[in-house]
Image 1 (cartoon, helix red, strand yellow):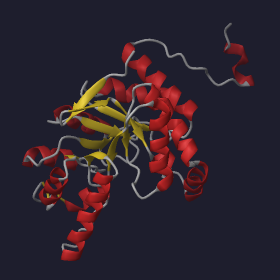
Image 2 (cartoon, one colour):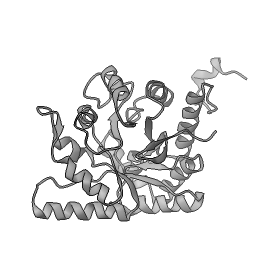
Image 3 (tube, rainbow, N blue to C red):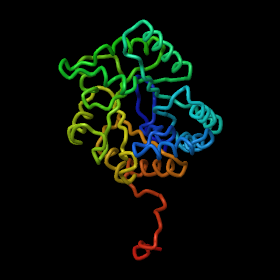
Image 4 (tube, rainbow, N blue to C red):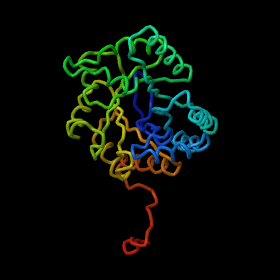
Length: 280
């Protein structure tokens, strides 16, 4: 089966998006874990993970940075191995000081993302959420940023950790084609209850990218993926990060099995305590 796809601003993307926290070193666990990821994930190992996704028709990456060589080189190597051209969703952090110097720096940042091949550009939550105004139900000063993204022929979206951002984006009609929403069965990093976010996702005018479906490793993959895939719309996406090629393969197979309504063809862990339930 070809992995199901949806569209963002007319661009075809798979419904399973490749996350980068476990490639770049953002574990949401500890500094020691972050350091381990950064030391482990060489260009070659990043390419190994991406190649598994690319070969399964999952060609879209969320996150990463154009100034991190092991990331950009890993993407290029995976593209060469697989013959697949990646779609990159960039999340730049922009300077909000409002000075001419800040404006110049932001222009250079967006130019760098465009030059690196960014197709969908979503200001990072450090930018988006700093502009969110609950009193006026607006995202202040975001329009010029989105216009600058359009001028560079990138598709604008919003990277956010706040549940209000997609709502205010729709209410005010700002120029975005997708939005990120933290969404997982554990409520990890979610600022309001899961059922409120679930209802919000179903009301959105544009496709939603759900992130942290496994709660940064706190949920079993079957549990986390089953929850997300069964409670979002057909146009929405799930973004999952993996650290190894085998993990990527498991995530792909589990996702396909859930979407197809069948048992997953993955090898279970084997321990002595499970001997009594092991079947031939």
